[in-house]
Length: 435
Image 1 (spheres, one colour):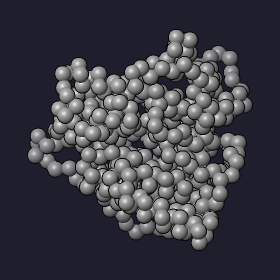
Image 2: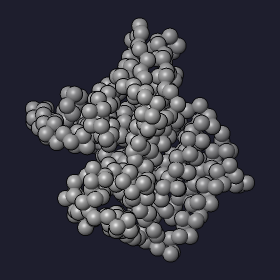
Image 3: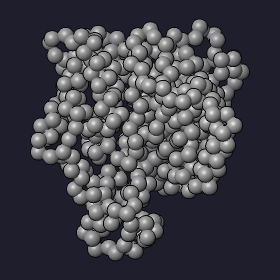
Image 4: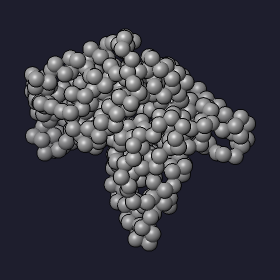
């Protein structure tokens, strides 16, 4: 794909600053970032991270996406993007000719391979036709698995758009993804769509609202009739997003508290996959990817020494036991080649170790394979349904401050256990916003 980044993010920041007649010192003071860092960002010596972009956006009065700029494409690729947008507009207009399931699943495997290898040129060529085929297949089959497949295609569109900072397309893709996931009961697909929705808040620097989205999705999953493995997969994926968001909070004290909550919950969920990470719906979760996200979160929170200590402990444990790599002493075996996407009725696959993921261009690609259906739920009565978190309406932090109200702190997530649970207190989440 002939993608052109013009100008580069740092150069774009310099253009915005000069257009306002500000010096680097003036901008750094307004954004509360160091002048040295700003200087390096503008000349390209340092990457423009989402956290810094959000701070600069507040100073400019712009969104983080507007600060990052938009990646344009070469003229010969504009037609492909136009076809993709057209397919997204026709979300409820399937083709008259039925589409066989095999064509859609084969297309998804190919899209996963392109996405995993960051082969953007091949992916954007494939997506318009794949999206139309998946739309027709979902409307024709009208099953949870078919709608989940369509939601996964929209998730790939979101990945492509967010990676290139086409934020209008990214937001539309997440909306369509959620719509597809809700056409038939599928709590896991809905959880994954919430994970991507929280990513759009991260893209625009509205971190706290993204955390509210994650919290609500976790409560919904914990209340759904799912197997322990499916529940822990969905909760764990949401926890990884929660870690990333917590690391970007401006209030680092609150960020550490939020991160600890998600880290502890993620490690509990990773216990369902003790041997290796599992790939599902284009994402990866398990001990390895949890460890990777914990490490990155510690760095985001300005705690590099803790990250180094975490790495050292893992190295010592690995030396003593090569199968043990994570700080919670869960076993993780070496990676294996990726297996084909599982079909309806097959067990959850255990595949390769994960990699950090995220929509920002500096992040690596996500995993690939995905389960087609939910695992059988527990028999009624084997687990207690957890009470829902009572979130107030999403309210900007400024509105709370103006009213004199305080932002409630979030507590730990309730732990899902195979044993009956006597009682779990509801958790209040922060309704404020800004990442």
